[in-house]
Image (cartoon, rainbow, N blue to C red; front, side):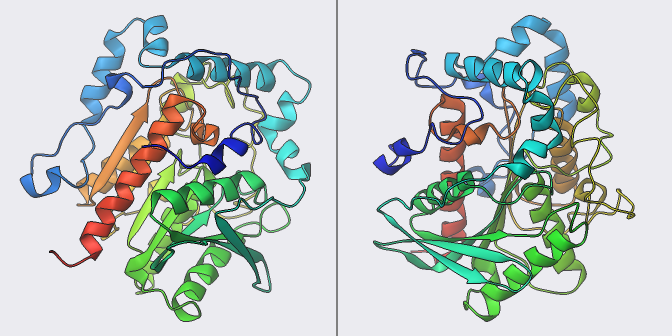
Length: 380
């Protein structure tokens, strides 16, 4: 898939780490980039893949040499970007503030320059604000994406997420993308973020007139976990559920109890090597139990959830957050596509289309939208 030209203006603007055009990397990703296997049910083969057996995946990983496994399936650009992130987060003066979230908290940005293909409309929701990105040409007025940004529940929305919104709009063939700037900790601990996500979802149904099955939740890191927490809250309170969920490197276990918090402790280029990071020290839960599923969805039930796409990097400390959710969701009958990208770091999709892995991840998201379209539209 060829992405439209507007994204080229923004590929190099977000990164705490720059990406060079001189890396001379291959333009594809090796076949072993994922750990998925096809489903056995014929009717699902053309739609959404089930997760592979996590036991088989772990056994395969154990059989590989450590050095070889880190490089397997990783593009040259991906390796260079990962090393640059590791240098900045571990060696530079801003490394500690990057890991703790202080840098994100204090960072100020100019207003986002809206690319020519889009409109961006602001809304005041009382406790928070939000923006709606829409396509100027051939908009899809029936479906909408509710994007919940990352930032460890401590950082507000950034311009990078409006670039995300543009990619979501393009890949979904013109769906509007709603981007709430929900309240964050420490000023606004749990349940503020969940309340604002719920308020946005209700606004999309009651004020904007979208059918719930035509609302797709999308989020990265904390935002990915918040998508799942919101869906649990809706289900538990008898409210209609969204049509699907896209979760990129979702943070679903705020207790940091998964195996990868140890096995990837020295591999993770962004959060690895220390326990003085927002992964371990986070004010969002406040005095609440961190195992509450509305805070850490990995401890909840995924029964009756809509189809999900989960993407994660193999070198993330948060890898187990995705693995746990994927196993539980599959056991509870959720239609799921779960993809582990070899050698990738936390929310590697922030590289947009600048490295093959992130480009492939976005293309996978586009395929997920196509699957959901076929389900929503009557058969021809």
